[in-house]
Image (cartoon, rainbow, N blue to C red; front, side):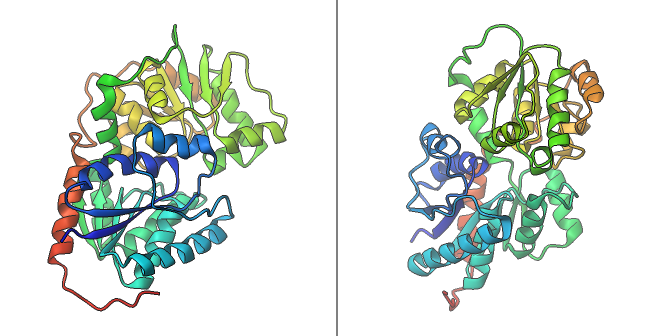
Length: 356
């Protein structure tokens, strides 16, 4: 009998990662897809699900936008009810969102095996809510699927109790599988593609203005699909968007990939976009002081500039590196995660579980 896995998603990155894994699970896992509703804007959730042809979630928990601790608590209670009803063999969580932590806590409370995709990432920045989420989830997980060698090294150093595997990155699976059939971006001429959504870049008018000053320092056309939170902050504080920066609504994932592919450079604070830039071979300028994706920096494809406009401009002028090793796997990470998960659950001893 195929194992039953309750699979949690809540935000755009999790939706992207869920698509290739859902496909890999088709013949060997009964996946019960649960959307916490953390991203409730249709452009950040429903359209992404349709765009990636991800099966519709069997549950949408409607958590919405709540403060971090409250959002986790509400999601945890609602996931616990799903676990009680479905009685899965495992709960699978991804990345570092509030949905991730809520799913992890609910699984442990119910005594269900916990699988963590994209484990082992660290920014070593305490003001990132995602950092606390990923650390706690890694410590709770029974199986940890690290996307790259550096992530495995972090988990080994921290001596997490679960089993650690390097699998590659499901996000790379999506890009590598679709790169030859993406639509045209519809853009002509050179442009820099920009995104910004991190709390420490958008929760202060001074910092957000400095981010906009960085985009002005590009001194060329900038396409800026704006996250709803970023747009609200710009409007609330009456910040001026620099001339040459084209503010747009969020785009679907395949549209974003096409824009990335055709850009001369990418400016971002997103971990996913940093990886995608690397996979496309497009230089990336990261508007953060740190990154979880150390290899993108050490290979020379990514430059950390914080919100320093002078450093931003200098980073755009750097020459492209001559080599780009496959640090995120060969496009078959989801198949490997499926194989490992099925094997682990088949080998797990049958035990009484105390479902809440």
